[in-house]
Amino acid sequence: MGRWFSLFKKCVSVLCVALIAAASFVLPVHAQEGSVSVSAQAAVVINADNGQVLYAKNAENQQAMASTTKIMTALLTLEEAAKENKIVTISEQVAAVEGSSMYLNAGDRLSLKDLAIGMLTVSGNDAAYGAAVAIGGSEEEFAKLMNARAKELGMEHTNFVTASGLDADEHYSTALDMAKLGAAAIQNEDFLAICSKTQSTATFVNPPRTQSYSNHNKLLKLYQGCIGIKTGFTKKAGRCLVSAAERDGVRLVAVTLNAPDDWNDHIKLFDYGFSQLSSIRMDESNTTFTVDVVGGTSDQIEVTGSDGGSVVVSAADKDKVERIVLLPNFTYAPFPQGTQLGKISYQLNGEEIGSVPLVTTAAVEQQTVEQGIFQKIGDFFRNLFG
Image 1 (cartoon, rainbow, N blue to C red):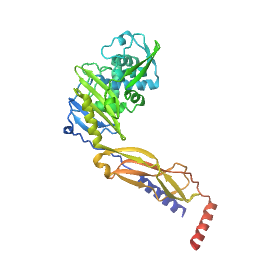
Image 2 (cartoon, rainbow, N blue to C red; image 1 turned 45 degrees about the vertical axis):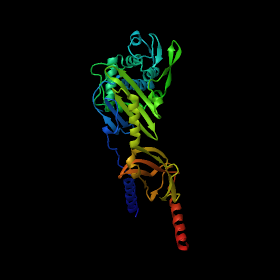
Image 3 (cartoon, helix red, strand yellow; image 1 turned 90 degrees about the vertical axis):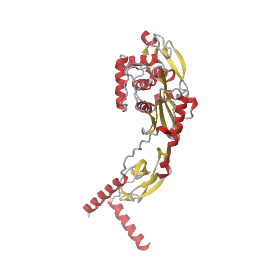
Image 4 (tube, one colour; image 1 turned 45 degrees about the horizontal axis):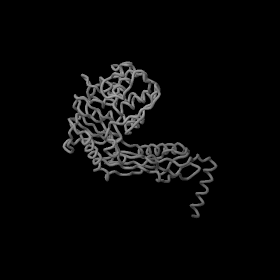
C-alpha cells in the first residue's frame, strides 16, 4: 500500500510539472519600409525588450556612424567605473583632441563616470579618448574591447576603430547594429541616468570644481517619453542619431544614419512603432486561489500572485492573448511559505509570452501518525452524521 501511494504521489508530481511547463515565445519580425517616410539614408526602429524590428530602411548597410560610437565607449566606461571609478589625469594629448569637447585641460583630474557624462551630453571627443586610454592603455587596445562587446551583442556588421567616432577607415556600423547597442546600453542604470537628462553635472577633483553640461539630444524635449540616447555628426557620416522612448510599458530604440531631418525622422519612427505594439499588464497582486493539502496539518492552503510587470505584443494581437490558470487540485505537505504551486500563464496562439507565479501564503507541516488517525476518525463521523 505504501509503495502504491508513493508511486501515485510521484505520478501526480510529474503531472503538475507538465502542467506548469511553458514554451518560450519570440515575436515575429515585421519590417515595413513603405509605412514611414524618412530622410535618413538608413533607419530602423525596434522593440528594445526583444529586438523585434518594426521598421527598417537599409538597416544593414554598413556606413559611418559618427559620435553615436560613444554609446559603446560610454557603456564600457561606466561598466569599468562600476568596478572601480578611478580618477583620470588628463594629458596634453587628450586635451588637444579635435572636434566636440567637454573642454578638458591638461592636468584636470576627474572620474571615469564624469568622463562618461562628457561623452553622453556634449559628445566630448576628449572625454572619449581620455577614457579609452585610461581603460585600454591606448585607443587601439580600447577598440579591441569595443569590438569584443559588439560581437557579444550580435553586432555582426560593425567595426570600431576610434572611441570618439571621428572618421577613420574601417570604422563603420549599421542602423540595426546600432539599435542593438542602444537597447543594451539603456539597460545600464548609470548610462540611462545620464542620457535621459537634459543636463548633467561633472565633478572635477583637481582643480576642484563642478561643471554643468547640456545634452545635445533635442529629442528629449521634442518627444514625450524620450529617454536618450546619443547624437552624432561628421561630414562623412552626416547627421546620425540613436534614440529611445518609453510609453505604457513599451520601450523602443530608433536609429537614423545620414539623416538631414533626423529629429522629425525619429518622431515619425516612434509614432509608428508605438502604434504597432500594445502592453499587457500582468498584475496578479490581488489574485488568490485555494489548493487542497494532503498529509498536512492544514487541509487547504491559499496561493497568491504578484505584479508580473508587462508583456508587449503587436496591437493586432492584444485581444487574442489568453490568461490561463495552471494550478494542481491538491499538493502534498510539507512545504514552506512562498512555495510555487502553479502560475498564471499569458498565452498567444497557444504559446506562453509571460507568466506570474502562484505561491503559498504560509507554511504547512506534515501530519504526525497520531494526527492522521484522529483526522480519519473525525472524517468518518462527519461523513456518518453529515
